[in-house]
Image 1 (cartoon, rainbow, N blue to C red):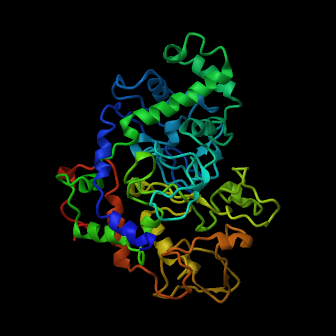
Image 2 (cartoon, rainbow, N blue to C red):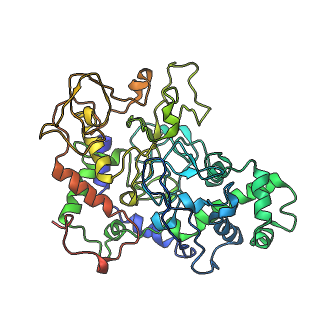
Image 3 (cartoon, rainbow, N blue to C red):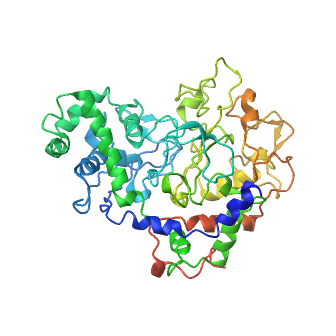
Length: 468
């Protein structure tokens, strides 16, 4: 029996996800945030300024370290600009993901610099193992491969290590050093709480204090239930709870999710019993090369020589090619994130080039059958008006006669052999029939919406596109 078949069967028997929710019943309350309109950034959409939210209720159930981490997470003074906190990009009101549809977020000393990658959600990260080139796949069938770690390329081994990256990144919170961050915490109103958690001399050694700052941020994410609420409709469904009945459209979407000849999402976004006691995380912690289109809205991409290739660099440096174009099986690989709360996002993939969940699914479905709507065409002649049959849901809406589609335009040709060929990205011939129909795509969107946290059965509409 192959991997896809077994994964499909597992999808229909998941009650452990809801059980896991009870493991966090002693966590603190999630903090509230304030959102206001601001200026536009990379991607051309209106940005929302840093979240300045504070805890709605005292987090008395959190450890001292986690209470410190909670204060740190919302402290805008920890940035070089004095206007950005961790919550600015990882907004609790948006499942600890970005609060806008920018491809990449703004930061830096003047809040005018753009990052290179889209912001992932911080929810459901606690089970992630450190990166390994040969990590056992939680499905128990697939061969070990690159997996684990934090960030899109896995270069951080723990949540604490991950937390230090934005603090010091010149395009993000833009602190000159760890000691500079420590000085700001020392001057903060919650400095006595830091001393209570880490000792009266906790600020004497800046290097140790910076490590404790990172550890506190990790403690907050591990302890506060808002980072792992398991409160979606799917959790009610998996636990056979009241309000968890899937509609016909959602049920069809679940089947498509696991169908190896259709969506096949479960092959990477595994929803069975996972690593470290996890369940229903909708990721197998693996890395895949699917070569999404280059995003020209990212300023770094204006330099044709800059190519973000994930695990093989440039941000990660321990798997760099030995020479330009040299064989390297890690090039083009990026993390397969959890799909929980994916329907709350408006920027997708590592470079944020896609801006709706439906468009992301359609990319998977038609990357190979209609590459001309995802990748640029060189040469040829643009038609004044596209044919009625020309798809309008892609990134490119101009139809060309002749010319050559620059497929996989953000990955050097030397690494095209690394690209995954699992369904629906199976390399089928351009012009052939996509694996999923329009109705299939709609049903899959409906199912993925059941992964949104905060589901309240009594307040949900009884009619709509996901009903029948």
